Amino acid sequence: MKIRKKILFKLFVFLILVSIPFSYLNFGGFRVLPFFLIASYSLIFYSLKKIRFNYNLVSYLFLILIVSMMSIFSNSLNSLLSMVCFFLIAYWPLFIERINFSNYFFNKIINIYINIALLMGVGVLLQSYLYNEMSVSIGTINEYADRIGFGFIWMDYSFLSLYFTSLIPLLWYTKKNKGAFAVFFIVVSLVTTARTGFYALIIFTMILLIISFLKNVSINNKISILKLSFFSLFIMPVLFLLKYFFEINASSRILSLDPTGRIDGYISAIDFFKNNFLYGSMYDIEIYRNAVTIIPHNLFIYNLVLGGVVFFLFFIYWLITLILYCFPMRYEYVSYSVVICLIGFQFIPAVFTAYFFAFLISLVFYKSNLKKLSF
Image (cartoon, rainbow, N blue to C red; front, side, top):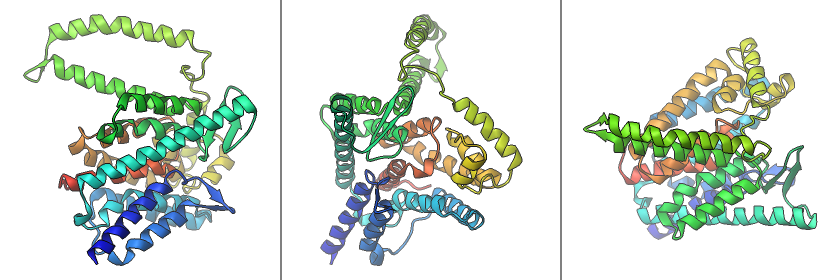
């Protein structure tokens, strides 16, 4: 009986893993993701005994409740369905017995997740080659004025770009030749022609370097003025060189810092929010599009204007509890992946349709159970 349960549990996790690359795929007019999740949870439904509630889970349940009530007025279930799928992917470690947790299986999950991403990366490279060299179109390809977006089997290139770079810290759990794999994921992230993943990784790396520097220049928790002065003399020329580098490469979309209309989107969003203070657009993207057109590419502004103050307050609480949950594991690579995503979400909308981010959250909960942390 125990062997059967373990097999079912492994199949359950495997189906959730496999659902990530197919999370935006339509087949016969239907999204594939819900069917993957129904199939996976049906395997362990009868073995579910106790849910380990925490503040983050409870706050997310309130978000689902708010969106479900808004769906009644908007007559649209799209956002609610997305949030339920996000929930099922992010919180599965809280539904299973602790006996199923092990470092070996955690590393196995990471390894499968990375290998799936490698296949996705190869798919993007193949798609780009066929289109540019042979004029053959496969998968999601969109032509814009300044670029051609390659999404392979995903609909959003920015999500795909962030998906590739956010898993780079996970390489340090299992993979040999980490540097080569990291370069591969950076390259395929750039091949999508979206900049989100690349810049999120750059900003995260800069933050790590600054934190590392502050630790090195401190003596007995006090900043050494002499070391700080030497650092300032070194960093100022570097900053000027970086500024010059980006200025001379302004014509390159990847290296350009041009916000590409995002500022206009933010201004329009704030104007919309002023007139829809409490409930925003009832968390319905179509209602917002019909009123404003330009979707705000920012984690906070997006959730503020779509859900209004009512949704936004609970969202902020959910985000804070997630960060607090990650903090005790701030030296774990999976927490680094979550932070890279949160940085990337400052430039793209719709966090609750980023199902790869949901899976990274599930890894945080899994790892925290291994460390026997509680919050």
